[in-house]
Length: 68
Image (cartoon, rainbow, N blue to C red):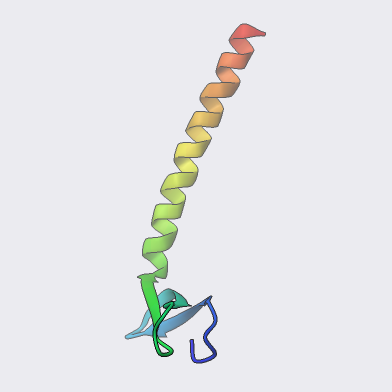
């Protein structure tokens, strides 16, 4: 953030693992914005998306099998 670049990282705060992404804000005097999320919360939403994708894939394979 100090160097005016975008990036991401992982850190621990209050005993909780967190992820952070940051980027500079255009037309400001060196300002940046950062967003954080608990690592477990991120993985939970990622796992839900993966499960949904697998269900869709399974259904597509089943349909292709019926058509084949």
